[in-house]
Image (cartoon, rainbow, N blue to C red):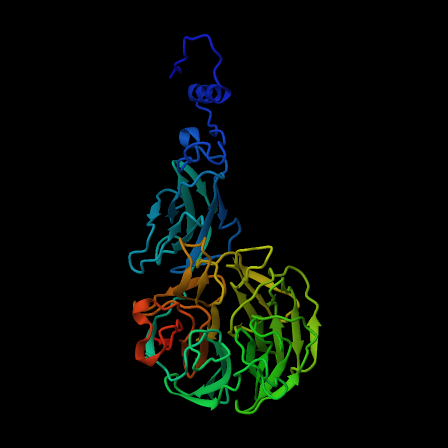
Length: 500
């Protein structure tokens, strides 16, 4: 096509000359950046002529990806030029790119978003049958980005039943309570609920509960944390949530404190019966922190990473510490690649002889107004050398997530997502499991299950129990069964068991 040039003898603006020349020669160019208030926003192709985007590429999976198990889910990610918001179509091929099958934006069975343009990531369900390799293709207006072939391995999917044990347990609902399996029972320690002043007069609590079935709980130790200003934290642990906890050598341990009360953030407590507690250490050698991952591993106590949360600054720790007794701690000198510092929530994911870190995030601070969340998987057999088992999980980055070990699988339960992810902020109700840390399978949760973060999980008596937690309850569920309308925490308990 020949561009129409005005007959008037006056020079054309430079932008017009560039656009006309591009139209004549079919060379793609960008529209000029008009700046704030400088005109209408660009269309979803960012002003590119001819549809070609020089910045479009697939960023994940990378070449050399290990085998994908059939029926597992995997992340697919891409980049575009800055102004391009068009969403590519996702395809896969099982016959070396001879034929391609498109992935729908939403999964019909689960209603999950499978292709998310705002996050520039997608989820692919590996087919159960066909081929020996799989290729992935992203197609943006006829412009294709293909993965290398990825070997297929047998499925490790199992069938599980997800049922509610109790609609309202007799434990006051809370956020960030520690869960421990100790002396043949499930234990729940501490927690936070600012909307329930009758049970949480100081917002956080130091009560202790015990159960042998998940539905019926006995209060072993009452909440004595009533007034932080007068509380004697030398005689008992102060009310807290987001601390570490575990069981080792016939004792339960609480490690670290709470971001809301700063008096005892480097202490360690132990108990054999949950009723009487002994302070093992008043000020540990490791820095003040919350949300550190705490393990009982190789006959030692371990803490990994965590974050200091103070008003004026935060510090995220890239460190590992271990202790034989909770009183004396030694920093472990790590070697090789290491995870980004992060804060996690309760769980004790020791799996296949290794300690595991899955997802996690960081609180905002004065220099970074938004929270950070991760979607990688790391593990270590000794705390010294760490291995990245997966760069990007199929599920979205998340923080305040429960990670547990059950039925020879590693589990990820719920959590919270960032505002930028998956079209909005909020709690997550999804559940995933893996047998190797790299191939993840989704267990679809019941429709009446409320998404939540900072819940509590226990692997106990052949079941994975998961309950309470912060759900930001909708109005229609508040004030139910005698709970105050200000309460936003869940009072229920669920369990996962192999399907009959």
